[in-house]
Image (cartoon, rainbow, N blue to C red; front, top):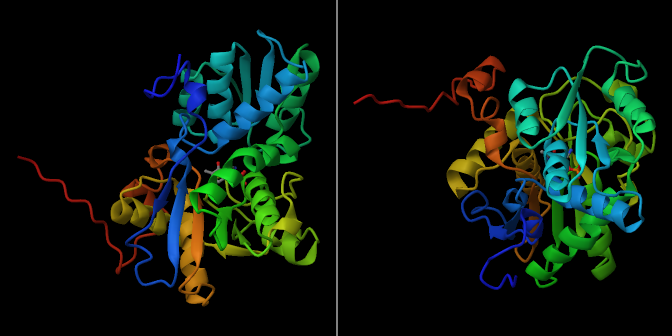
Length: 344
Ligand code: PMP
């Protein structure tokens, strides 16, 4: 059926072509113009829809997958949800090996999308046969006709964003983009967009956002893996304790590190000033923009695009819970709980 009346054959046709939304309030005093690439407009509410669709369709093109086959990944997050969604429409089994640290809500969400979820102990090393990495690998070896997405080490993760997100941003800014600011987890988003934008204009500055407690920024600067950089942090989906091959470090000009606390407050600020209900890493990306602005990175003529990877509804028990914020010590005297509940 033609989709010129906003009618689609299935939900997968809505993946990509997300809007670029001008930020009007948060950046009012900054030099330059700021736009958010709002990936929550994908049907699975995150940028991971793009990679799930691309990796699965590439396997189909190569004849590796046929209906009824199995798709395996190790994630309780956005990628799991997107793979489950694509699997439903295309008729595949979806198996997700997740850590026992994952919240019950997340596991239920994946199950509602038809995924079979293996909950693996969180406290074991990655090489322990019970770890979610090893369980995923074993299932992949055992199940004939299965593929393992392995997003941190899959070049197709970069290609998905090179083919879609990069060209969309270039066209939406009519080639006037001067800076891209994006979080780096697997690195697929930033590397794919960077590759496309730099081919169009090598002067576009690509800025990655990393977490304190992650090795990415230090590795970018020294090309050495420094395990002293690693410690626990709260933001999910940003930074890493290993070097993913889905990150093209050469295409990134610099990294900025952001804190858990400032990123959480900034996510809330985006929601209640711009009216865009975003996830934790959108707060991290915008926090990086604030820091860059303070460092004098931008000038009046700049056009800055910030990627907002997912939707706020996934963080109701975290960033948008006053109790969680309080438990983390993220509310101080200057920043009190704002909730007012009135009973009539
Ligand atoms: N934000 C969120 C919420 C994510 O789940 C991810 C993916 N890990 C990212 C940002 C980073 O994207 P990428 O993996 O493409 O670097």
